[in-house]
Length: 94
Image 1 (cartoon, rainbow, N blue to C red):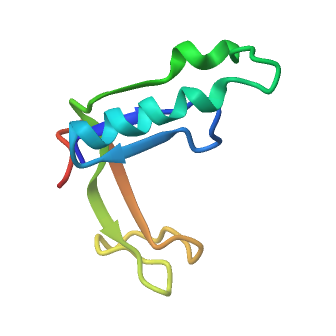
Image 2: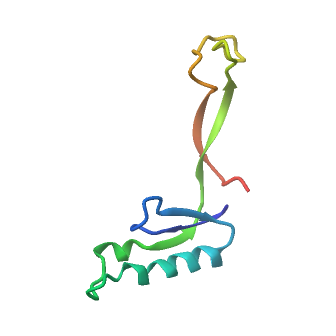
């Protein structure tokens, strides 16, 4: 996914899209919904947007943890997790 749209009136306002057209269409469709029944615009209407994702946080250095709580590196992490990792900005995964 290389594009996004944002609707500030939606709890999960950020959506990812495969094409610019999809992102723009979703953002444009959010605008009319921000007009209330009295004909007033929500103050957040100017936050509706869409764009191209340059980089996104991705997992790196993943260490799988087994049922006994031990990682592939031999370190004991505990039984309440499945893996350890770091994150860094990188190009979006397709």
